[in-house]
Image (cartoon, rainbow, N blue to C red; front, side):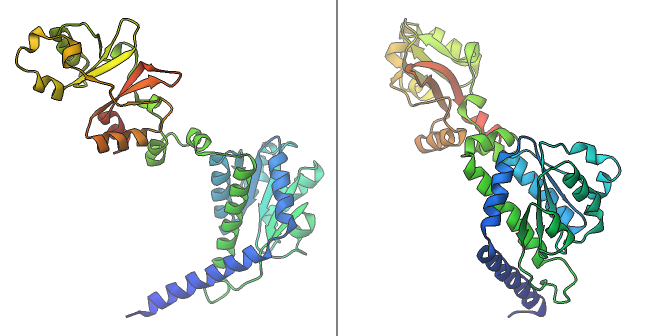
Length: 320
């Protein structure tokens, strides 16, 4: 059974959802003009706003920066006390004010006009000071706030946030921004881990457990023990991968093991992966095949091992 609080929540969410639909329907050529200005800038996108609009501006700046568009939030009050020096003629200013009459924006708007810095305004009032001064106006539909009293920024801030996301995604598509690019800006946290490549985590050089195909098993066992991965790759005289020796292989050849060679114990044609593959894909392979390691091979020379990836390397960064 719904309580009054749930009824209120549903009303707020539906009011804002309807506003987003109205915003989508209201988009016009000015949105394309805004994208043209933002995509052409040689500097940064300077985003500003006061109060709730300032909080939204901060989020839009963060979204743009993380998706390949250099962006910076500048507080309009601080701008009037020296931070205008952060803004250059190579930048574009994106100013946010629902009413378009926020007095704190006046000096920053004037500065942009004085130095011919492109100005994009997000407002619900095209005839406001911000609307008139802007080179491009992204107009928000005049719709009631979801608070019911008409005074708490709710519907308007939601529409502004959505407008910022629309700008960011449109700019991403304009510059063909990919997950690989996104990864460069997100090396930390769960998201960074999901976008890690095998090459970021693999062990290379002398850390790789390798023995020659003719090596006696005592040598192979020593290599397994010293490197600590529980496996050893087997290569021929040309350095090409021939097989892998795991604990399972050792268990199957316990009788007379010390008299055998790596060739006689190894599993040929082991599963491999390329260094540029996502580490998440490597985890999937290891889980599916119930193995703990993958030998990494050179994509141009798939017989040549260049590293080793252990499941623990992936777990350490939050994958698995």
